[in-house]
Amino acid sequence: MLTISQTEIKNRLHFDNPWWETSCIEQRYQDYPRRFYFASFFKLVKESSINRAAVLMGPRRVGKTVMIYHAVDRLLNEGVEAKKILYVSLETPLYTGLSLEKIVNLFQSEFNHKRHDGLFIIFDEIQYLAGWEVHLKSLVDSYPTYKFIATGSAAAALKLKSRESGAGRFTDFLLPPLTFAEYLAFIGKVEDLIISVVKEYEWQEDDWAAKNIYELNKEFINYLNFGGYPEAVFSNLIKNDSARYIKSDIIDKVLLRDLPSLYGISDVQELNKLFTTIAYNTGNEISLDSLSKSSGVSKNTIKKYIEYLEAAFLIKIVNRVDFSSKTFKRATTFKVYLTNPSMRAALFGPVDDEHKAMGALTETAIFSQWSHSGNIDNLHYARWNTGEVDIVWLDFATQKPDWCVEVKWSDQPCSDSRLLKGVISYAKNNGINDILVTTKTVLKTGNFDNVEIEFQPSAAYAYTLGANILNEEVLEQRVAKLSVQ
Image 1 (cartoon, rainbow, N blue to C red):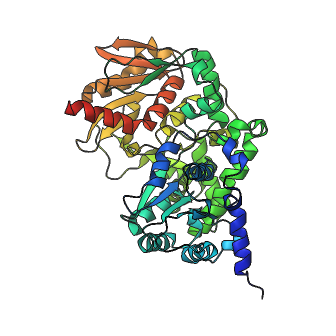
Image 2 (cartoon, rainbow, N blue to C red):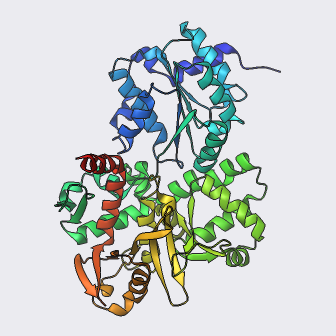
Image 3 (cartoon, rainbow, N blue to C red):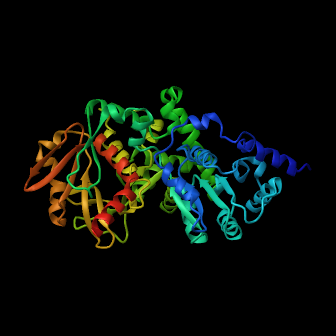
């Protein structure tokens, strides 16, 4: 039987690392705009004061590999020698069966690198190597002057393993689908559609409003239909056939290949049916019982599948609190959100501003802006016998809510207090003063039943969230500075 030779492997390494000969990345990668998250990620790439690998996580097709190439480009521009940067995609069949250490050794021998040289070594789609976390930790310990960077699409699984086996050796970085703020920047319409709102105090988060809410809403609809994926934003072919691109190239690969190979799932049709049911109900409250009845899958199997779907970053589970903001020890109901609202349009067709799913999709889009935030698990929803509130921020230290948001794709609540009974009664019962209700077009502040409510268009709020979460570190530094003064 023929075996793959080291010469063939080294030839492939040269093919995957063209900068060894050209000293630059390919033009097509240079032409892609940088994600807003690039600067924060590149800090991890250059971090040398602590001996840790950077693990870039996120769902398929959100730009992880492109961001890796942009990091290589920046390293080259900063004077790092081209032959000190190695990129390896572990999806490549030629590397199957090779250990990470063997790949590193081949790289060392090819250019006579020494153990204490400053090398940058990138393993793309690392989850395809069984026991990757043990191997990567060993390399980090063995070569403290090398910087190891890994990427993977099974975000939750990677995060769990990096914490268990790579404690103190891995730094996780999550790259979510495009935020609405990034989407507008990518299509060059921020200046046309968004205006900055002057802050009253320096410590406050930045806020933005729509110059033309009707035009902003049009782009928000486009964002819901295809805007979560960078490639879809720049390709008219993909825009016009997003169902084929997103479903076949993204969802099906995860459901039919990634998850079965990672978790040994034999009945992929069962998994696919469950995901389809969940996707159709994004933003709605569901239960294991209802999922079991509608999909025909047992509850125990559903629990496992939900964990796998979260691991693949296709969905996010949000837990419920009661009228007094108490959590449930045994949650029988919960909300499930698609991490990218574009997936629903790919499965069930595009939406317009009058579509019956707009309310749930708007809520899904707003929730998805939180994907990169380390505080996403603070988000809950409240429901009790006579009412509910869509988003509640629960402070884990005090177990009390700081603020709440009711998401609407309608202007009717601005003039009909009956539609605000739930959020008003919840706010009063929990002493919440920070209350926001999103609308379709209206921006104003109103007082209902002695409760002040801020009304803001959903599209503008989604933009604000996406932009501010990227600036969380800046805001924290600003607050810390003011507290010292």
